[in-house]
Length: 119
View 1 (spheres, one colour):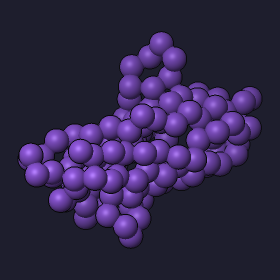
View 2 (cartoon, rainbow, N blue to C red; view 1 turned 30 degrees about the vertical axis):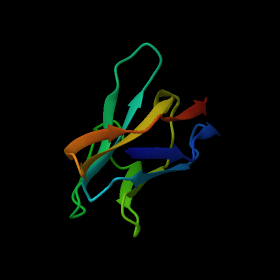
View 3 (cartoon, helix red, strand yellow; view 1 turned 90 degrees about the vertical axis):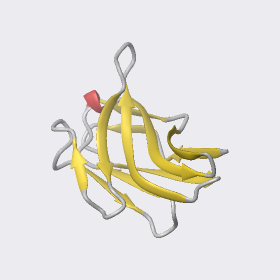
């Protein structure tokens, strides 16, 4: 079994910063791409940023230049540095990972962490 656990969310004023963390544990033989997605109330979950195992990154246009995704030294850790936050960044942020387990490759999701940006 695999678990992804996010942390670091909270309430911040517009223009402020937050750093989200995600750690995978359990039956993780290999982890390839990891990413962050967000879901605002009443809206679909959308991509924020992804990073491959080689460190290649991609970002949604709405966060380019403000957010930075990175992987930690420990296997299965990923971070999202969020700067210059705007009210429209308010959402539940979920991390995911493409993970090889003893049962094969699958995509796993965390439960999410709430980010609220006050204007």
